[in-house]
Image 1 (cartoon, helix red, strand yellow):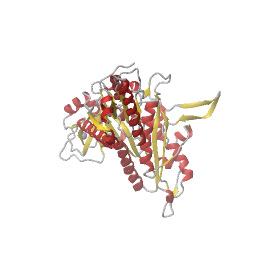
Image 2 (spheres, protein in one colour):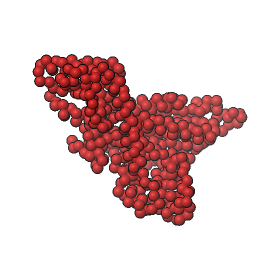
Image 3 (cartoon, protein in one colour):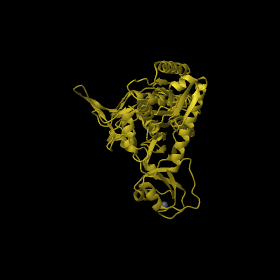
Image 4 (cartoon, protein in one colour):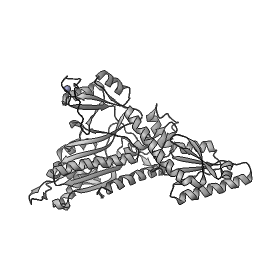
Amino acid sequence: MVSRERWSSNFPRWFDWILEEAEIYDYGRYPVKGMGIWRPYGFQIRRRIIDIIREVLDGRGHEEVLFPLLIPETLLQVEKEHIKGFEDEVYWVTHGGLEPLDVKLALRPTSETSITFMESYWIKSYRQLPKKYYQIVSIFRYETKATRPMIRLREVTTFKEAHTVHDTFEDSERQVLEAIEAYKEIYDRLAIPYLVSKRPEWDKFPGALYTIAFDIVMPDGRALQIGTVHNLGQNFTKVFDFKIQLSDESHDYPWQTSYGISDRIVATVISIHGDDRGTILPPNIAPIQVVIVPIPAGSEEDRRLVDKTVKEVEKLLAGHSIRVKVDDREEVRPGAKFYYWEARGVPVRIEIGPREAKNGTVTIVRRDTLEKMETPVSTLVDELDRLFNSIYETLKERAWNYMKSKIKRTTSLDEAKSWVSERRGIVELPWCGMDDCAAQMEDMLEAKTLGTPWPREDAPGMKCPICGRDAVTWIRYSKTY
Ligand code: ZN
């Protein structure tokens, strides 16, 4: 049992604590390293987040598919840079029963190769384009760094990967923009802030022309990548000799993009909306939106009245499709129940005692601000609707303000170094555009390069702190997960 930890001052321990305390995710006990288990409460949170991802992608013309888990080595190794980027972290199936296999089979680390291979059969003409597929599946990576629940796993159980095909480069560039807009909508609906960067050349997705990434600053000041968008160019279609007919009747290789979101999106929601009491779930994804805690009454008559009111309020809310739960455990005192549901992040608690029951009111406590108020039952449903919106807005504003406070723009390497080493977040320094200077800054700061602002930003009048030449843009560094 991990003891209660402080969100602000000991986030890594807090994260382990909340996963166990709120029965979200079991990690470290299953006898395969880097693999965790979604428990029912965590599964419900995850499912609602996936629902949002599906809604946003479906609404933008994406079609969901499901590809096999196994990818033959012959497919995976076709794109040379791609396999080079993944080869040291692929799990291989080498046997069927006792028989060694002729061709080794990879547990998919990502699906660019298998999807492009099949698209070459399905897509013959520009008239079928753009084509946007996605799947939400497990991927496997033999991570050699220290693993962390939901954040660095060997089985990523919630990998949403989208793969698109286009007849022109321009249309693939338009798709990159659409993907970025889609991701912004997903994060916005979860009240999650983000910083969008173009990853440096040496840290792009293996096989891509370039990579755009979404990062967030976690409560311990380290950046976490929460989404990526890649323009793949014609790299994969060329190696699979996948050609289509174009509008001028000529034939050429189509253009592709791919973009992914993982379990980290769930880790982020739980973490960024946390405090020392536990997590605070945005009402739209909370498995339980309202918990009703009856306050014990003295007399038998009061008790019956409280019970009756609790049942009426429960029925009223359920009838309005509010996810409500009555905590009527006899053996647990109200204070312990408050603690229990606060940790789990239930957005609203309703207390009903004899006084409320007699007055036809309830006491409402919102989880984000812990404010208390009394409301007549007759207007409760409207009040909750207003509260859910207000909680969402408060969480979003709080998270964005927090994130902004964690980004420091400076021209001084010393200041940047102390910002990063004290784990205060992300620094932005002026940069001349030379890889060498970026690498030197990375070494001096002992941090990772997140890349340059997207959309691109100039740095007028600024000098690169390494070589002294004119800066062409800003470059971001942080300690990372
Ligand atoms: Zn320079």
